[in-house]
Image (cartoon, rainbow, N blue to C red; front, side, top):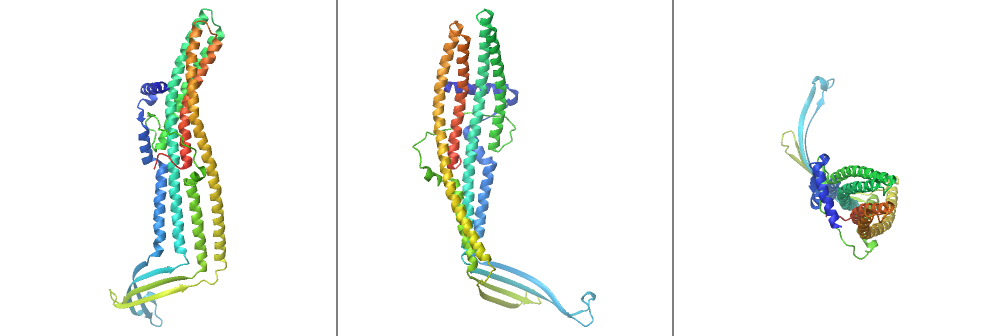
Length: 429
């Protein structure tokens, strides 16, 4: 099997050099595509920026715990008007100007726990952004593995398809010689020609699929497809361990963290809504100067404590509290349902991964058997010991198994990537 894959890689190199469509193909390793995607993928960049924004919002929500300081300067002019005079005619008298400068400070001492609740809401938002980043990392990891495996599959399939075309050409020559010698019928020749035409068509389809696979990889890498791409080496895979505790695993996923953040935000919203029933206490102070010269020379200051107790808000606070409590119930119910759905998803992707691993082994066994049977059948047909129909069935089986083993290897990588994504894991840390 390894020999077949090595031949596929060498065949691609020859095709990419000789084919004008990809005459200057850029070869990438798995390590290179991981590094490039980590730097340039648009989804990752957006998720990282969103987390930074949440960090700044959290810092901003903590500002109510600190004093609020402000300063102001101003100038004003006032005067009186004589009887029958007008300001617009310049008849103003006793006009004088005044300057003022002040420094004010205020501090919230108690707000019914609303300030802390708003900080908790910002923490919940940050938790959601962090979970979204982890979810995005898992998704991009899955997309990158699928795109890399898809391009590798397309490369190997193209080489294999060209081998099939050559094999069909040789088969047509062999059948034609036997027809000309009178030991084969015209229908066998026509069928062999049809097989050759089909192989040429499938080669064209594979070339088109290769270009699509290149574009898909370029998209995940965050680059424009200005040059053709090809990949080398294989994506590292792991061997399954014992079946995990899916319930515990579900509670460690970014999807659970998202649900948990919604519950935390809803809990804080209840506290904010209830704050309307509690008094607020604040401290304020002001230090200023006034005068008709700059800098003003007459000092003034104020210092006060304010206690505010709401008596009636028209039912607004009561309605807001009930609404917030209902949202909390909804968030908790959604979290439970999400966890159950996540357990199911984990079980499905884990089972699909195990089946994909076993399928590679099965397809390899079928391929080895089909390869040996095809060699035997060809020798029998050459020696007149087998009919065209029997030989044709075995040849078609070999071609089918060649495709299947390549597909199973690609599907095994994708299945493992799906399993990692469901867990919220991947190649990006």
